[in-house]
Length: 577
Image (cartoon, rainbow, N blue to C red; front, side):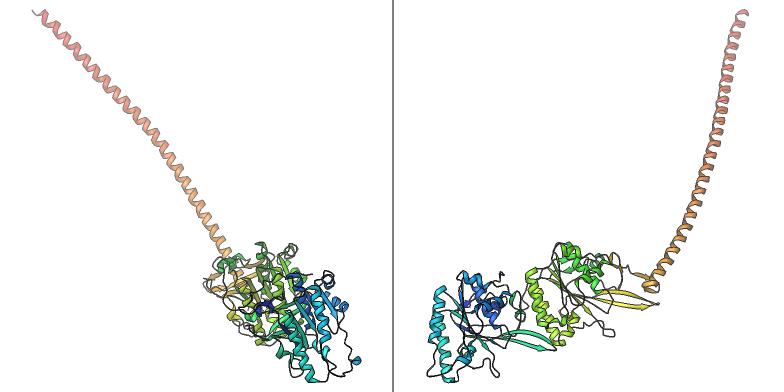
């Protein structure tokens, strides 16, 4: 038995609501079906009326503690149990727990003969007993036409229908009566919709060989409700209504950033990447590398430990992961870790609204923070241009209301204006990366530029990028005398520049060697001169010292000679006396 966790809206003032537990339905009914009153669920064959009623009862018993009675006029209990088991409902278990009563009232038209006055007293007694036996708060009658199929008296039929609806209201149970859609009205008898307090129309239409289920609340006494047609899913998870047309623009936006997974592309976006919760479009012609950039986007989210949902509409998951491995992006690793989930389906598998509902359901289950759609231009084959644009507009609003960062790739046809998305969602996009193929010099070069980035500074350069075994590599811009060069022209010019730089380097090295040699020669000459100077200096100093010694000796001799002469003169004077 699956578990529903949808938050039930509060009951509107003045009218109590009975939550259905059906995802999306309680939102567009502002809380659920009118409590204690009868709702008519009508539609054509195969529109899902019986399953709608059974899910209402099962969810009441399992999620809201309200027991129920399912009275069938066409299928017996075993048939019903087997049919709804495909939705994950274990009806027999609820019956065994006395939370649910399934009562089959066999009505065989060939065995009925109308005689005398007709009334539903017997049905009231039987239904009343079933309600009292489990204390039921919810009742489903499926289908009302079977009960009156053999009656021709329209007056009695109308009177009994009114009496049935009044009896259900008097019992205080919240009831669903299913009815077959008539040729000119909502029901065959054209009365049930008038006596019901709420009328829900289920529809399944086929357009261009694609079937789409839609739900519309035709009437809801005493309560506001969504008035649009809403797509709904009916699969192994039961009913899911997609109330996307009710989404307004009143939602909060985060201010932090998430990486693109390509550092140089982050740099082009101010060095921080995308705004979280924003919508990104990567458009370009075939083979420009849109999916590769989307793969980087998904891998970067997984590296941050965040969950990523990748919706692929042209390739199987295995094929996509194999292709991305060729450029060094291993997505299988993140699938195994449970951080990456693929949802792959051809756009023509079902209608646009069904795609929308399927994505919304998967997001509710997986709770990703980033989602990639590759490519959304494929939806051209699933509907008209206005339908595709409307669906994508709802999808973008839905994702933004959940603050989920989304990346859309779009294939641009050759010859189409490059600054125009094939699905007309350019005005809904916050950041638009435009990829181009440039053919020149006998080769094709991939180019990328940021066409717009709301609320953030970004590069206005056209950058060449390569798909390498390490992923997407943005090449630095080469600006020469003849402008910006790309591809082989850029590579050739880079080689020429490299050779020129090498020659200049060698020439400079030779000059440095000459300078070094001359410097060493100069230093050697200076050393030689210094040595010669030292020798001469020493010789000169020795000569000076020798001359000074001779002068001093001569002076001392002269002094001594003078002294001796004075002594001789004194002796001679004594003798003369």
